[in-house]
Image 1 (spheres, rainbow, N blue to C red):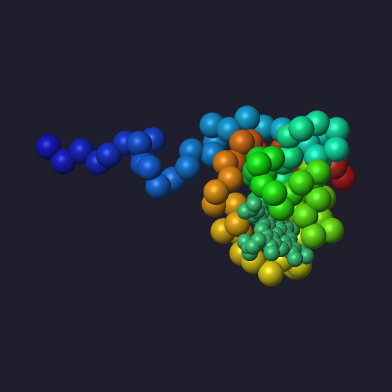
Image 2 (image 1 turned 45 degrees about the vertical axis):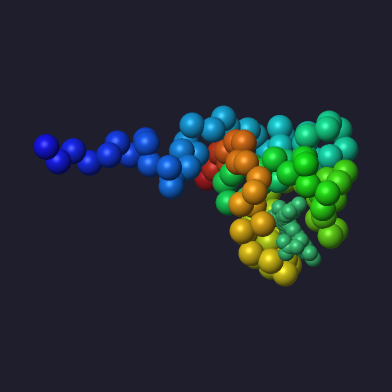
Length: 101
Ligand code: HEM
């Protein structure tokens, strides 16, 4: 028998599709001001950076948590996305429905 391993057991791929979806408004509540949780949106995922000393009160080098910072990381940051490696992705960011035109 030569059965390939089930893809759901692949430790190397994170099953992000199982994560709950949050709207931009729900993400905005986790900006470090209104609640204790501090979340950052990046490439469709939401990372919980609450325990980071570098994101205290939701602020990180003039960037604010509670929103999608994909473009900002690519444009401004002196580091790569590997800074997220030690933070769990806790959700997926719902993109606004395309406007009818
Ligand atoms: C002016 C722009 C920015 C500056 C100067 C900056 C600077 C830094 C520095 C010095 C560190 C710690 C050392 C390192 O890992 O390289 C860090 C960590 C980090 N940065 Fe940024 N960053 C910027 C923008 C961003 C943006 C836009 C994001 C989110 C998309 C981000 C997410 C993070 C995260 C998650 C960490 C890890 C925090 C930790 O380990 O506690 N950074 N940043």
